[in-house]
Image (cartoon, rainbow, N blue to C red; front, top):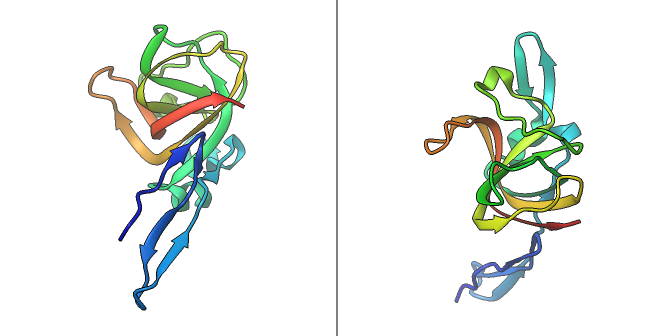
Length: 152
């Protein structure tokens, strides 16, 4: 018997799995917290390199706190999370233009957005590496996908 993990407000509440002995065991793990200061190991004229923490957490569930950049429309499936409140949305034309203090958030479902000056927490799966959204043409280096958010 295997129970499916339940995600609620950024916390992985638990899952169960059968061990080799056949006994039922419970393992619980919370998403790893990630902060803007730990995204990149090096930033220079030749570009940016991901930190060891990002490399380790890629493909895993994480949480991040930050501010929602002004979205293109009131309800959508993605937005940009920034380290500080921003007056303008930081859309980039290539990964060479990518700022070191933003992460693209792709939501699990379309949502109405918060005010840009409200601190929020995001939970979802971290993806690292250059990627171009086929629908919008938006280029990103870091993304949190299958995400949800709430006021911190």
